[in-house]
Length: 65
Image (cartoon, rainbow, N blue to C red; front, side, top):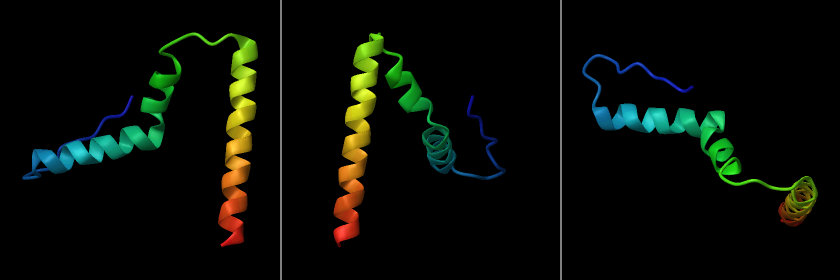
């Protein structure tokens, strides 16, 4: 669980943005999104394969630049 301590005389907006960064870094939002619905094992495998292919193509595009 992500938690932060609000510093003395720190604006609440800055503390909220620190909290958001920490939540994003720990992957809490991604994990919650992943558990919003059930995926059958075969679908999960297909999705994983598709995401790996997408990541590979993206790396190739970046390498060409």
